Amino acid sequence: MKKLPDWELRFDEFIEKYRTREFRWGSWDCILFSNKMVEFMSGESLLPKKWRTWKNKGEALEQIIKLSKGKGLAQGIQNAMDLTTGWSKVNLSHLQKGDVVVYKEQTELCGIFDGYCCIGPTKRENGNSIVAKQGCNITHAWRLNG
Image (tube, rainbow, N blue to C red; front, side, top):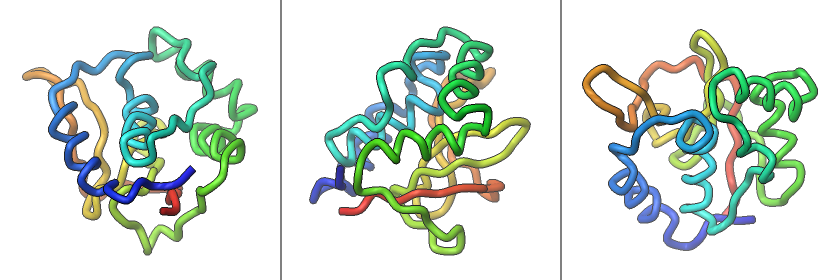
């Protein structure tokens, strides 16, 4: 797996295309958002198909526990990356646009670094959107070579 030559244009197209998509567990949550961005940048899915079987937060957490062997979201993502090639861990002081990140809020969340902050889907009172979160407590990051 590697980034396509026009991945940066695709990154921006992705934001425009999905900026108002409705947050929904199992179809547009932080994991599936991040995977879709990886697909846009590389043309390939990162996640095993069995990751797409949840319908709510509880089922999502069950899948994360199962696929990470109880070690959390970051380990589950690492396990998925171990099944392919082209990924490397990133020192948190060297983050770049397009890196996949895990950050901590009340729970671990997955997103994409846009060069300045973490981006991911959110559910808000005034509508759904892709949100840019500055000052995230990023705990893990990976980069797709290209």
